[in-house]
Length: 66
Image (tube, rainbow, N blue to C red; front, side):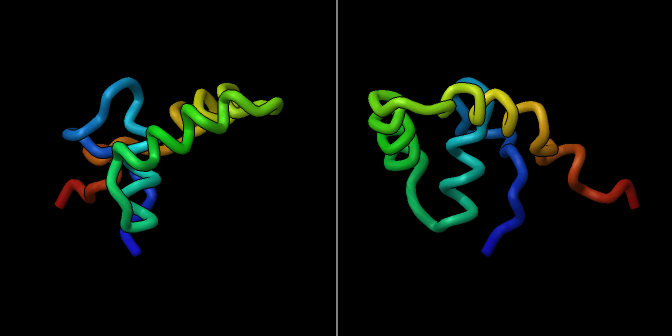
């Protein structure tokens, strides 16, 4: 499994769905459709997305400097 980091390429808004798709081995489009469908259900999906956007490191920050 890949590390859970927001990628530089392939992201649309924050890169959260692309990061989750890379982590679980599925396409980013599939993950976006799942997220959009889950927004039709009651719950804090949008708040969870924003929280992951702020908490997940970007791919640039996750690489070591050396």
